[in-house]
Length: 288
Image 1 (cartoon, rainbow, N blue to C red):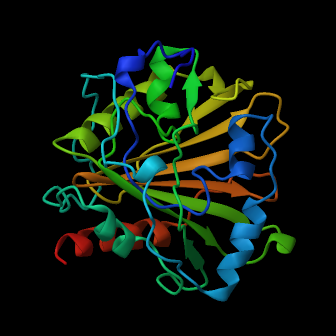
Image 2: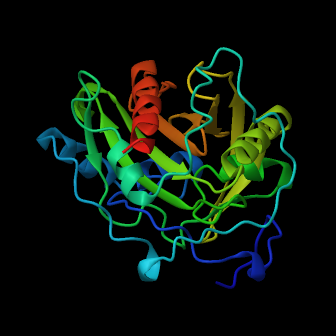
Image 3: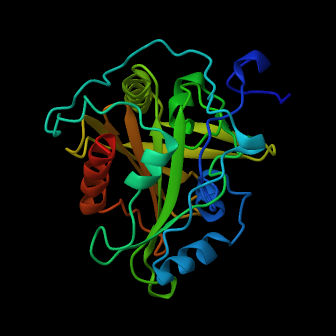
């Protein structure tokens, strides 16, 4: 796909994204507005409302054109500090990269955590055109959390929407993206992400449609779950949109990336119980 890349990636570095599933694109349109102010498509509320029925959806049909399972990356050799974190469970490093079926089995479902409803997405969560880039190469690992064509390719992925309470009571809309990586890709990417969070306080984000916005990043610490983890907040520097809180946890060769937007306008991270249960289910799926 020909395009001008702020990340300076060549067309040769772009291949078809890994196969996945996702009725709701990752990130959802309303959440993407926190990343790119020009995007305000109020369909995330519909997807979240659909969780009230308790349905977890059907297995996805794959990515654009059927998807081959091949992701795309342009490199990124620095490992940062993506090893096992202090305070994490540290027992998931043996978990190999899961395939799409295993990721779907591991995805949080309604009832897994008391009070939460979940809906598995049934179409492609990361369509090829869903790209987000940074004007500062140091910040690229941050945009890769939601980029359909990240530098560190995914071998498989799936996603879902999580909801507690209702939109009318000012709850939080949350999504989770489960990704698998070959070799040591998960560890390498998380290391690069943590390195980026130490040096990248703000950047201009650009989506494939050309819209741009200035984004501010506030780094957090680990969450003490999985083999490695990090939490950070992203917000529009103009303060027009609710901050988005990201929580990324590595379980062996797989990652769970949570994205949470509070409808109250205040930053609200995903509940620890959700993070812990997702880590547990990824480990269990490896044995199925």
